[in-house]
Amino acid sequence: MPAAGGTPVQLTTTGGAHPIASIDGKTLYYRSDRDAKEIRGIPVDGGRPVTVAGPTHGWPFSFAVTAEGLFYPAPPHSGKQRFVRFVNFKSGENNPGRGNPAVPFGDECLSGWPLPAV
Image (tube, rainbow, N blue to C red):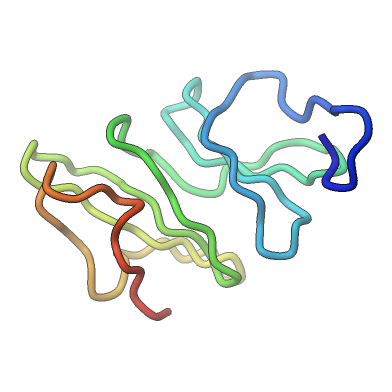
């Protein structure tokens, strides 16, 4: 539904979960479970979705959007560690999250981590 209210508008046709709006409110980011568990972005006023990051881990899953890019959980996954990556919106670079490349699995939830400065 538009932020100002009104009639809901369907943005995706292939499904998705965990929607998060961009800082400026112009893009909706979400997880696509159909295509290798990618994070996609789509303009809130309609358009085609684009892959922003991936592959991602299936569980536990969360991601964080900043003005510069987004943090997300990524492979490899040993059962004891998961890795946090950062994709930069301007450059498209996809690197381990600064200061937090791996954390113990199961002890903390991704959404509860303090995010490092970018």
